[in-house]
Length: 350
Ligand code: ADP
Ligand code: NA
Image 1 (cartoon, rainbow, N blue to C red):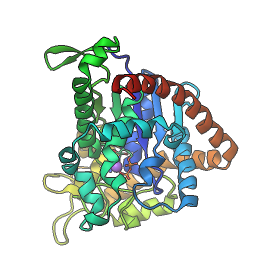
Image 2 (image 1 turned 180 degrees about the horizontal axis):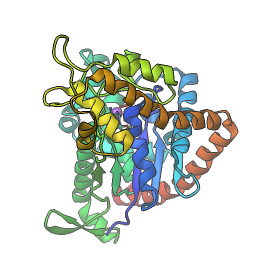
Image 3 (image 1 turned 180 degrees about the vertical axis):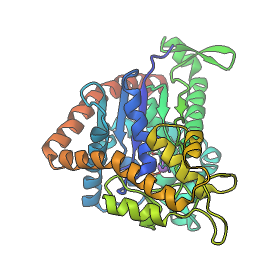
């Protein structure tokens, strides 16, 4: 069987937000006591859409600082930026030749990000999921903590692993490079594991504060739509005060969250930040108006995020330290990636 290994990444595209924290980074921290973990700042993914070079460098350091500020230990685990380990791009090319056009054409994230002008989207944006599969599988990682928006990409990662294992099954067996694993009820030998997504926790999909049908996102043009990890107390309070709850005219009570996605999102956020359940929050605030709940949510968000923001500022001010973490992590990741990539080259005949 494959040894449990966690891999996940965050793009250095600015505006790191509460969704990234609750859906991903906080969970990265929680996994490090029980697993070996590789956490990556995915700069090659970032450039699938135009990035100002100086901003990209800054954002790479900022995401690294967020990882460290949240509590990831770069000595026990690996923290690095993707472009340092060229094997990610090399394996992505092999996967571009394994994955089918039809598979990638079904990816909803591409459709959302490319928008109406698909002809003008970069080829990289289209192939984004094959690079993501390579990020994970170049380490033969078995578990990937992500937000709900990444579910489809993780399914594609499994499809790619399975097709590679099938396409090269004889060669993998001849070279003795197969690892025993279960596919459904069947026991097979494969080179790549079928990675498990870990889409868990109380907030796998934090919604925009302005539109309960859209996820909170770095790229939303409205700054009011998200709480950034670097927002100060005033900004956090203002954004929560202005957060949508219900269409005008409807009663605005906490109970009865059905079909009220904006209202439900605020309750979910409170529960996630307080590390309690939605039910407990409803029991505490039920019957009250959102005007009473919002200040309590704002206070809680400030109490949880302010120490992380302060730590991010402290760590960010020491560029030498941050760059050292990435360099050291990159070297350790590179050794692991090259060991697997060497076998991939053998398997494929390269
Ligand atoms: P974004 O989607 O904001 O551009 P990334 O693509 O870098 O950010 O995603 C980094 C991690 O944060 C991924 O695991 C992703 O699933 C998670 N994530 C992003 N947005 C949200 C959200 N609104 N709620 C929960 N998790 C999220
Ligand atoms: Na995303």
